[in-house]
Length: 363
Image: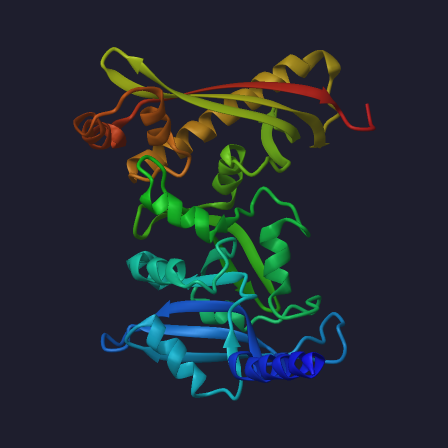
């Protein structure tokens, strides 16, 4: 009798679950999502959802997906309206990439950031990026090497696949933190479609609300030296007596501090680079290694100083100079306002030491 009661109770519990949960075949897994700005002031938002279609084969180039788009007054309303266009429940539990349209990012990301951060079914470790010219065009790209929808973007930003100094990674939790932290501003990688593949070699630098500057590929590579998620190898170029010298940096130690010159704070950056000669159109002479190192040091000093001054003049701080300033001293609100007022004129000094460890397998 007791056993029969237990079986009855379990059957009731199991039958109840069918009303609370939906089977996998009744769900659409959203692998990536795009948010764009429209020209319609009554419906300013357009969302694009990449919905994976299950298949029996998992092979490169055989992935199946559909992109559903919807315009609405708000992002939440757009998601609700998309549900009226599909026959399965939308599941955002596996959404790993959110693409923000360039026009939206240049206008104001406050509402989009707030919505992404509030949803409990979004992963805080999801990747964020800017789509150029828009987010929808990024989601329409179907790389032939892709095994399931959105896999190319996952591998690109997770560094499980490619590792490149041109690719910066921004996650939702870090983006939210940077928009609220004094002295540290957010950044987002920029994705551009190139037929059936992606081009990711620039980074957008923002204040707390919108894009203020998009760095070039060379500037993006220099900013990677200050990235906290690890250093990726890159190449520096210089010319000595009209001869090209490509220096492959295999080890980098980038440090910065806020020092005072009188009553004015200044940024002091120290770089220590090690590597090998990777390419040259003239055999490098061992006796001239000091000369090569000095030429590379001057090249790096000039490029880094130019980049940092450019960022400071635009009022963005992706590296965290203001955060270091607050951490090194007791900063009152009045003193912080003085820092902000004088930030655009902040002096910058860069000191670089280059050590050439070898010339490759050729002498």
